[in-house]
Amino acid sequence: RIKRQKRQNIHTAMNGGVTIHEGTKEDLRTFFDFMTQTCRRHQVKPSPSKLDFLTSLWDMLEPQGLIKLFMARHEDEDVSGLVVLPFGETAHMWKFGWSGKDSHFRPNELLFWEVIKWAKNHGYRFADIGGVNTTLADAVLHHHNPEQSDEETEKYSGCRHQCRRGK
Image (cartoon, rainbow, N blue to C red; front, side, top):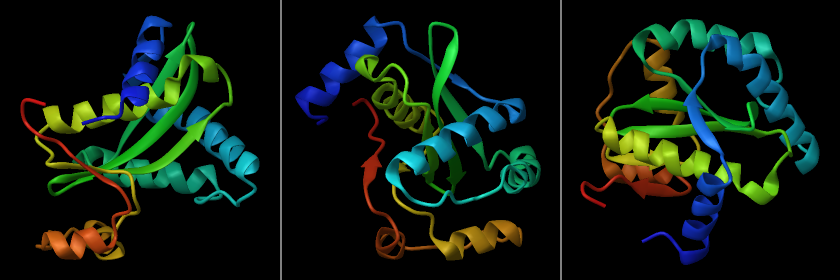
């Protein structure tokens, strides 16, 4: 059910040599630079505002599998990234950053598409490109596993893509 233009842009990225790879802690600096560049273009303050916060969050959540970084690469250079916080049945696409390069190859659309596919393949029911519910975030920080109804989750989710089996 993806719009025709989005499908075409995803194919443009794939045919143009854009690839997606899972990032590591060492890629956080590059991602953070992309995120701050994106914020400057949109004339907003970056959040988080410090790389140290992002690396501390990584150190805390990565051993539990509760944070992932995906990077889009074109011609051996990373051009955009997306931090994902998988929790419960939802993969929350938390923070995004783009260098501003290679827009005609549509790396960002392929990045989001591949993360949606990753979420589906890893058993998540939803890939959420909205905000993260603060109740869920607090529970993760305190090592709790709250039960939440879809209606409660929906309140905090801007756009949700259901990861349907076989589609």
